[in-house]
Amino acid sequence: MNALAPYKRLTIKIGSALLVDRSGLRSAWLADLAADIAELQAKGAEIVIVSSGAIALGRGLLGLQAPVLTLEQSQAAASAGQIALSQAWAEALGRHGIVTGQILITPNITEERRYYLNARTTIATLLSLGAVPIINENDSVATAEIRYGDNDRLSARVATMIEAECLVLLSDVDGLYSAPPAKDPGATHLPVVPSITPAIEAMAGGAASHLSRGGMTTKVEAGKIATLAGTAMIIAKGTEPHPLRALAEGGRHTLFQPVQSRAQARKRWIMGTLQVAGTLQVDAGAARALRTGKSLLPIGVIQVFGAFERGDAIAVTGPDGAEIARGLVGLDSDEARLVMGKRSDTVVELLGAGNRAELVHRDNLVLVGAKEEADHELS
Ligand code: GLU
Image (cartoon, rainbow, N blue to C red):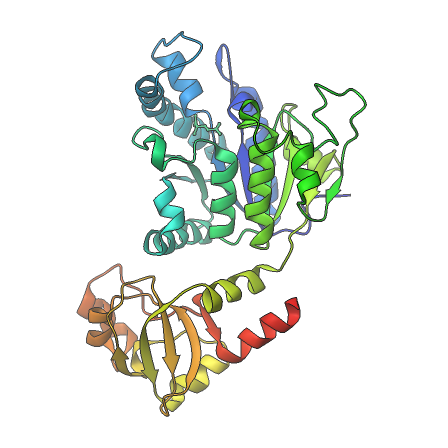
């Protein structure tokens, strides 16, 4: 069975050990992986890569031999290695005519809505242009307190941020076992995990084991982040050549099934967990357009209440003041006041290039009736 067939948008995380060995970059392996990515893309998939390997590559480039690097050394290694890493990806995918875009992430980018919206838009734009975004943590400046530290969880946040249908973690294990196989030779492989229970966490080696950081524990933590947001996760072995082709041809893996749909997760998030910072009152035409699934354009807005910033949650009310939708707003309140009632093509004139024509994009908008639906579907 083709494990990747159900998914259009995929985030693929590549561990350092796959890309780099003692002698440096494993370029033949990377060339094969790039061919797999090109094959998937040609079939219509949208691929986002989260690639580790900066520190491992930089260590070699800078001649840092110590088995454990100091924080300063690993940050310097990340800085040197990231250039080599991006170059390797650009060359490998470039051979298939695919352009790459580099994005370096710190936790505030995936956790703060304003940055989050920007990063999401950049990645979506790269994908729409047929490019492959290559993402890593911005290790050379991230400090211990504001760092993911492992690309398993980082890739899960990226996957949910861009609403990928599936996150594939390629590493040196072919999935989750009933116990760590190195310790227990009788451990059995789990092909499917319907939900991450305490028993599943225990199989990963227990949440408290510091030895397994970056091992199965962070992978299961990544699974929690992904599956709760409606993104499936696959753990598969990446060490052999053509690991994605192997998955498509039925290769062994563990599938973590999403616990709710992405649409439900997003609706719940917008409707339930955010405080509204303001209100946009719209005319009858805009209210009708919203109900048919359109974005909210400035021309339909008749009043702006409150002080909010781009990315904040706002309520949308009809001409009678009744709430019809909630969403994440694309402009600050001052800008919204400036453009309300104006045609979209004048927005660029008023606010400058780089501003989007929608006040609330339809992907960031939930109709009020849809809240009960989402709750009902889940109950
Ligand atoms: N961001 C780190 C690097 O590029 C890797 C972190 C990880 O392996 O999870 O070297």
